[in-house]
Image (tube, rainbow, N blue to C red; front, top):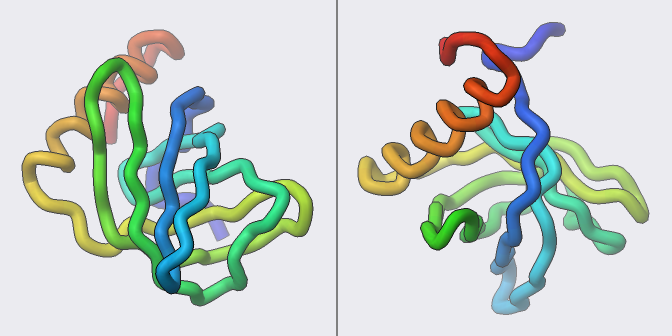
Length: 106
């Protein structure tokens, strides 16, 4: 099964909140619908969480769900609820990442 949109390599800090626990982690890939978070202790597939991504002095926040988990490596998450303000920030970041790669955003 192919992806709906491209993923872009990305270096950003992130904060994940789930079940009252907060973990600081890093984003290594970013797309319009989710990202990959590098962490040695990924959450289980299906876990709901809140994520804040910090990059270039801006913050993106969303609710999300773990769609796959790789022990000792990290987890892929799908954004669930993204407010319009944060959607704009995400689109700006993706546009910049696309320019670096040389293409067009879907």
